[in-house]
Amino acid sequence: MDEIHAGSCLCGTVRFEVSGEFAAFFLCHCGRCRKDTGSSHAANLFSPNGRLNWISGSDRVRTYRLPETRHERSFCTECGSALPSAQADGFIVVPAGSLDGPVPVRPTAHICFASRADWDPLLEDIPTLDGLPGQ
Image (cartoon, rainbow, N blue to C red; front, side, top):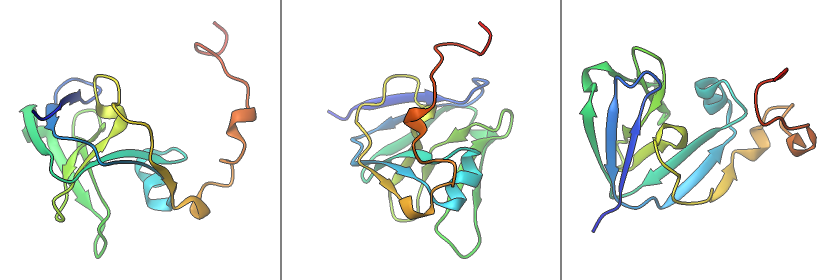
């Protein structure tokens, strides 16, 4: 029996399910993924034999592929949230933050680590807050 992982975008317009196991969970630090996320890295789950089923809002999903590369990003046209995509090589790529429940696996590896942002090292030394500043 395949595991089913439910997810959605921020505004709730797009809802999806991915069935199958996640074979890898990569934290990618390449410049393209930093541009995609606006953060230090992308956090993507990879399923080599999964199936992606759009529950609602499939007409609001757009995919941008960077010309002459394998790099692509799917997103909701209403809120801009990152969404899963079915790659040409058969993998389903799922942004970990798009899942509605817990992520079922730990990250496999940091990839493209040599390309990480110059402000990325030693982030664990920065103070942590359990809420917003000033609360």
